[in-house]
Image (cartoon, rainbow, N blue to C red):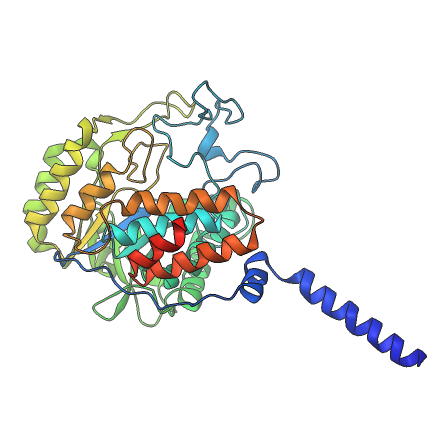
Amino acid sequence: MKNKRLLFGLLTLLLLNVFLSCEKDELRTIEYPIDSFDPVPVEKMHDQAVFMHYMPWFETKESNDGTWGSHWTMVNKNPDIIDAEGNRQIASHYYPLIGPYHSGDKSVIEYHLLLMKYAGIDGVLIDWYGTFDVNDYKINLENTEALIELIDKVGLKFAIVYEDRTLNPVVDAGAAGSVENAARIDMQYLQNNYFNHPSYYFVEGKPLLLVFGPDRLKSEQEWTNVFSNLNPKPSFLPLAGLSASVGNTRSGEFAWIFDGEQSKEDAWYQNIDDIEIPMGSAYPGFHDFYNEGGYGDSFFFMDHNNGVTLDSKLQRVKNANLDLVQLVTWNDYGEGTILEPTKEFGFSYLEKIRDFNEVTSGSNNIFQNIFDLYTKRVENPNDLKFQSQLDQAFYYFVSMQTDKAIEELYK
């Protein structure tokens, strides 16, 4: 009898440990089962592949050991200061509709990806700082992994925009012997973890890879060495105007904002027939916060002009009839190129992108519905039954059962 009681006690303890080790979403799935559905693409008439440039680098006090991340603060802003309208003080001229957030927050990622999906966006281009535990690179990597985990469930693609400017700090910190060695380690990580992911985007049978520059590796030989262990080699696109520095490793190049100089943009579009894989860009404007935030001089200014700037850039890439389009950007609040819903512009930019993509599915108020899903998530985090109901709404949203999603959301 004593042995039986001991065995029963051990089994009870084991089950308790298993229970406590489960995440809340796992617990609610067990207690309140839902019907999951595979993602279904939105219906749209426009066939250009449209990608959103995305920054995964935002941190709050809850995610960053009690300190707001520098992308919200720069040098001199304090989000703990709240104005009369309830807005936190952040290093930006624009304010996210959901307030400053943690990029690794699952509710935030769900909100972002669903908005993109219903705007007809095909995938996310993730601004990527590599794999080393230097500065904030590691937490950016963790946020990227959290983003990728949900991308497949929502039904979007993704690809990487490599920031080779991160390589010098890696070497200076003693984390790698040379910038080439550090870049090779990053590339091997991409091949082992991303290029083989079912949602990674391929062009001409090869994984798409962009570099924002190059800034540090500026020769064909360096990039040949960096790609030496990759199979297949990527469809490699440097920034427009810098492709000569990577030589024959390039497969094309991608447009950006051209420092606000219209003549440079005009010249690029006039010569796209000479580029094997050209990726065009559309953006709402440029109004950086660097001077006000204590980061030095501002770069330049391009007025959002109440959405007229975005209209003109979308029309330009449509007229160019390019296969690939990059929207610049979802959430670079420091530079003011935000397409994410903000208090200043609401959902208007997403509506313009939705019209550009000629999306025919989804309700008229779909972006508000997705915003409400996020709001309900964060207002009731510990109500497992209600969170399960919202999980069900999520699966209806991703499978394009929009009417059922809305019914589930508001019942």
